[in-house]
Length: 110
Length: 117
Image (cartoon, rainbow over the protein chains, first blue to last red):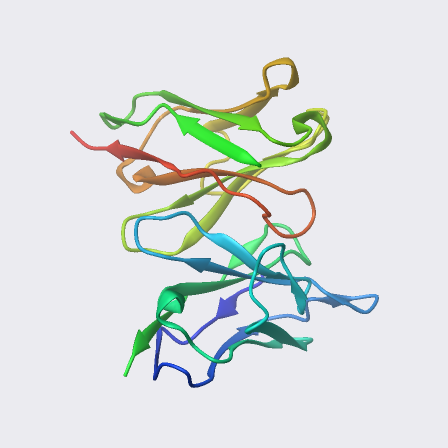
């Protein structure tokens, strides 16, 4: 299985930039597409898709969220961070079966 | 508006069985692969099962293979997860989500399954 590694937590100030990283144990690119997706989960809620295929913004997601990266190194950027963005963020790969998730990065306020 | 509504929440003893349901609306259910994904308390997300739009293929995580069965009834826009030989480590919030080969676009609100004596 492909293993995804995220830092457990990141402290950030409001209106600053947050960069959340995800490293994979194998390349998750294929034919120019990165099979990397990002989700936001707030306490007591289900996860919500933010970014799909590396850099595509999901429907209804604000433009302050962006995704980048390729191969084995990916980043979710939130710029600027708003109070409503305090949550846990998960990366997920769909290059190989089974689909796997990172352990999550909890975004906290400084 | 896409909606996925799970039901079947409960507390069961180890070794017993349980069946979860997920009713879909707001999209053409019969066109989409469907998944079950779970999250143990205070833990991360674990994909556990996928069923193709026409039930032609089913895939399972090793952790549930042989014990859980995913199925669907397209006439009722409903996804199911039958869980047998439940263990304490199956205690989790169970989510249904649509998607086939990529991201999980929409998720239900989840149902809690607790396996304890």
